[in-house]
Image 1 (cartoon, rainbow over the protein chains, first blue to last red):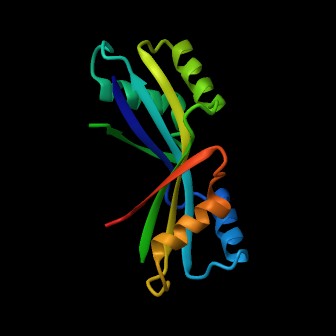
Image 2: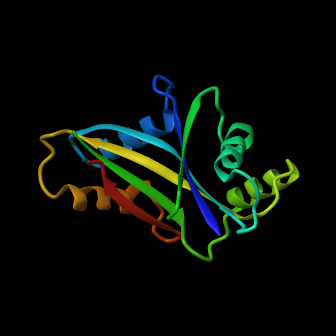
Length: 81
Length: 81
């Protein structure tokens, strides 16, 4: 088994209302000195051992087609060692 | 500035409908050999340099109080080097 760990984040400059809301909520709970909060997705895709071909290319394609919105989001793929 | 990188995932055994939906969608797009998909949150909290006290304890408390649901979710905190 091979596990891909994918981080999907909004691109720089794209408004992040979820992060903004969390930031404000933390402040209203009394936390000071927070400069920013950004919220994205973390996705783990586990592939079978016999998955053929270039795994990295495969997962990249999954990100492009389904797991992220490439217009407004960036993604990063790491493999569990 | 210090950036905390937080992963929030559903605990083992808790149903992950979002991950299940992504898994099925990937299969219906023709991808084979996927053993599982799990979807969680990735949160970056940036603290000001002058944030006082134990930063790790602070962020842990934020996770407990707002950023995660400790009943069904686990969280992990790393610090950007």
